[in-house]
Length: 157
Image 1 (cartoon, rainbow, N blue to C red):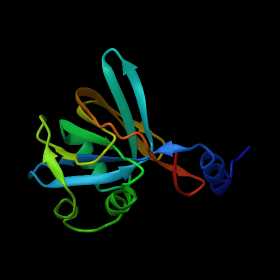
Image 2 (image 1 turned 90 degrees about the vertical axis):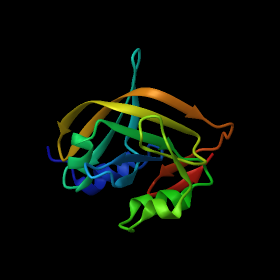
Image 3 (image 1 turned 180 degrees about the vertical axis):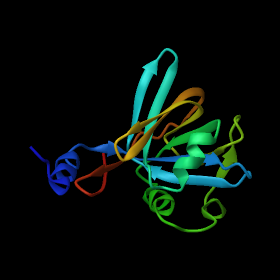
Image 4 (image 1 turned 180 degrees about the horizontal axis):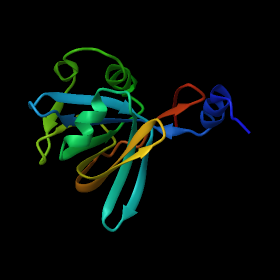
């Protein structure tokens, strides 16, 4: 039995997901970031998380070779940030507030939480690569309202 891709996407769209921006540095020290909603916890001991990225993305090779990345969990007020990092805009980091994390990778301002990670593994999963990171530093805010993605659009709690 073959499953229609559009039907599969529609079914998955009925599962509300949080939205994150994953940041890293390329081999030349350039800053990269991408909006991701395929994010999940993996383990409490050690603390580990994962995200996935399309294999055809030019960022896939960067995440496969970088030692560190950070995951910013977006607040309900950060839809513009999500859109910025989802698109092909140049100089994205010139347009946002950020600071350098302990691991040298950008930490975006205003996120609900930011997880500084050391890359632990990468696995092929169909047309995506699954990146697993061990959380080395954690930052949290007092904000409580998350930005969500549901049925092809943004939602908030």
